[in-house]
Image (tube, rainbow over the protein chains, first blue to last red):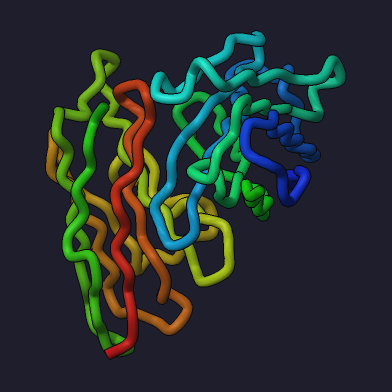
Length: 119
Length: 112
């Protein structure tokens, strides 16, 4: 059974660094073709793809945010991390991680973690 | 970035009615490998998105066959043949042909 779960700080102040963790089970990120992505959704708005990391350790970023994003994974291939530097109120959103395998994009999603940026 | 325009933004339907949602892309989504990376998702209230359709017309695992997808190039359609109460929520199309991957603005399906 494939499951993903996001965790994060809940709230942080502007200019700080946001650190998110996606913990998953039921698959391994070392499997050929496997990719884990981060996607966010401000309240009442659409979805925005942020970043992804694949089974080979290759990383992909949305150019609109690339300078502020870092995606990584742990050596056991069961967790993926996302850091966003210099956050501001526009980064307030629910953050999801989602799995893809080859051209089977986003077949499983986590429940999402809400992050509020406020002073 | 590729812009996906969904119409209508709000869709009112009765139970049992058949409805369609359009997704129009600013660029062709036909990839050089011959695939068209167009996907459909449903987000029920308070839930994460769930994938319905992959590669334009392929039904995801466990998705009822009242859902169907069609289209090519820049124009795509999601059809629900006989809306059920559990289908209410916001529908999104997404493309993964051109980086960065992008989503449409969403279509809210509500009861009339």
